Amino acid sequence: MPKCPKCTKEVYFAERVTSLGKDWHRPCLKCEKCNKTLSAGSHAEHDGKPYCNSPCYSALFGPKDLDVGELKATHSLSRPTQVHPPHQMGFKKKATQRSIASSILC
Image (cartoon, rainbow, N blue to C red; front, top):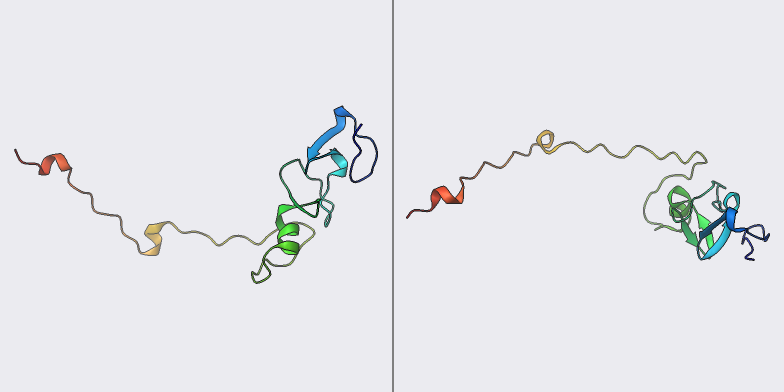
């Protein structure tokens, strides 16, 4: 019977969550930094330990020259920059082209 890497107790089939190549108890599969319960396959790992993709893993192990902001316990990130449609940024629509068929002469 496999043992949970977090609590080292036996993991029964009915309670098993497989992630990082190991079998875990569902409540034991938590972020090492903030203890948020994770679902299998939707998290990052470092040295065999699970972490939230964002913000924990990014803040701890991501590129250091980028400003990822402070690691907050609530996991709320600042709002992304609003993307404006092209017509609000001064772009113009392309003029419609005549069909190729109408320009071919027989």
